[in-house]
Length: 202
Image (cartoon, rainbow, N blue to C red; front, top):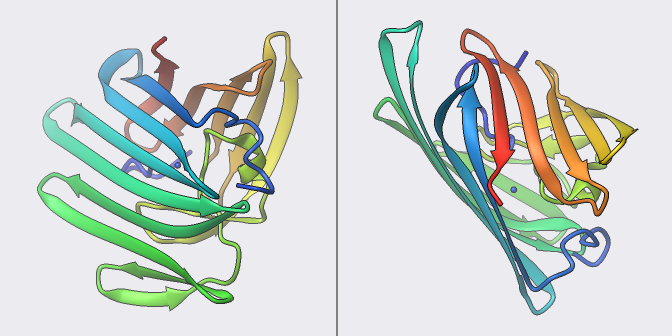
């Protein structure tokens, strides 16, 4: 079960095979226990040798039926050869704002979160749901919290494509893809909230 706080484990020559077009876009309606609470959008565009990924999320719901929660998350990532070159994200929840930035410098990737900077190694990847090949890594960077998390993946074929279960230290996320490898759905149990689902809007 994913901890409450709604972590967006969020958004190349080695692995950018699913995103074949110069630009692609995903628009998801987001539901919590069957009730629509907002949206999450992803836009991927090719810039010569790089890929730029912009994402935007907005959720509004009530915690424990009476505590109003408004959540906004915006992030921009730049990828090259299957690795993150840079990351910028802003998250606002109940009036509190957090920022995360990341930059690849030589053989290092530096991450700053709320004024604190640390190094997490070379060829860093994030929770890039839109390209399943980018998820095949022992660690993935959470673009909302700046944490570099150990993960395990389980891939299974389905009648209409395949599904991937991602297991970070706390909880798990289920991703669904069609036979062409296009991301079409997400499901996660969020602690204290319920089951969150992403449904692709065609």
